[in-house]
Image 1 (cartoon, rainbow, N blue to C red):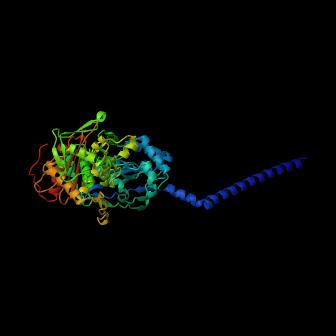
Image 2: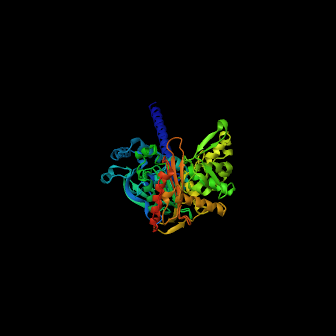
Image 3: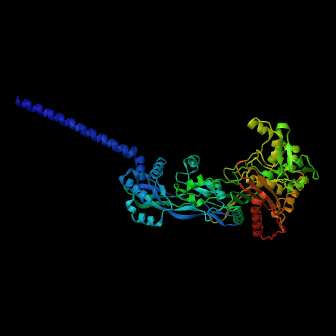
Length: 606
């Protein structure tokens, strides 16, 4: 019995040992399989993951290419500033979270905005994100001394766009800002990434791909806490290509100074090439405001300003052209043989259209009237009644046809964003738009540039350019050359003819004579110089919402025009009194700068 009992206990113990041995063998078998999986099957994957945790990449933004005027005067460049970058992956550790919270306090950052940027960077799989730009030197010194206390942080010298002339030609040059989600969705395939700074308006936007350059990067080994250990590799950034503009800094300055504090626009171009010599929109803005961080408070002030400083009045404002449009009415009448050079209309100071209940009186700007006038003197004196009668004889459809031939109601194609195309109405347009009949009164208004007509200052400049070149329109352009970082010309933009109209020599001659006579004896005598022949036209656009808008256009020399000037003054009143002094100053400065002597012989009083 006793022996049987011992045998039973031994058997039970042996079974337990066998089970334990089986479990141990199974454990080691699973363990070996797991090691095999980690080291052989998934070894490459985990090796790469471990390397990514050990190696951090930091982008080095490339300096943008410089912008210069036509003779090399710098309009936009780059200045080195200190930026603080942070690795969003560091947020996974307590040390990293503590570091970013202390950085937010030291750099006076917005807590929510900073974490939002970091989280967005994690989703985009960026290993670093710039959390603060233009950091003061004293803070950089402190952070450098305490570098080991801020795992995940990197201090970097970055180029920041700088506009040395501040608000000079700001609408033409444009500005840069951080790429937003909408822009990124359309540009990511071109290599753009979160945090990039891109052109937002102007030349900076249209030629962003040329100016951008190629970003560099650094690979840095870090320890488990995210602190730098050593530099693994570095690829230097490559500066973007530069642009030589057609802009003449001196003529641009003369135009801005002449317009002064008035709201409006100035366009100055060479009619023989289409080169933009000056493009002004007032009020303007300082693009350096956008060179800093996106949270800068000045942004709201600019975009909410009721004077609309961000609005480019040269290509976006659409207003009635007023008496400038009499050029089109005259061309249509001459080409359709409605009037001859010596035919006259009588102006008693007013003109009545319609009968009975539809009877309406239209007045001339000269209350006592101009008397009998032919087309040359009608243009020179800008007689409204003359053009009322001429417009009715010519017809709205003919006037609209020639307006479109001169490029009105079409975008000029200038390489600037957000250009408007204006509007040239017609009887068919009114019927389609309002389901209304076109009345004789509509034609009367149209004949002097009122009613539904809308144009931009640049469109008007192109119209006058076609008068100057006798029917040839060159596409207005801003960039003359693309240059390398060493200043070598890589690409040159040539004048491009985009429109031609064939009018009779008699029409061109009558038109030029009328605009020249306006300077000699008519409404444009402010531009009467001894040594320089100018052709010109005034315009006053009625404004139902306030004071009228003022226009003035001119070209010189009359025989071989090399410059076209268009001045628009918002709420300026009469063109002769408000806009013509601006044009006179620009012409004086432009030709003095070209080394030509001009002296006045007579200046008419308003």
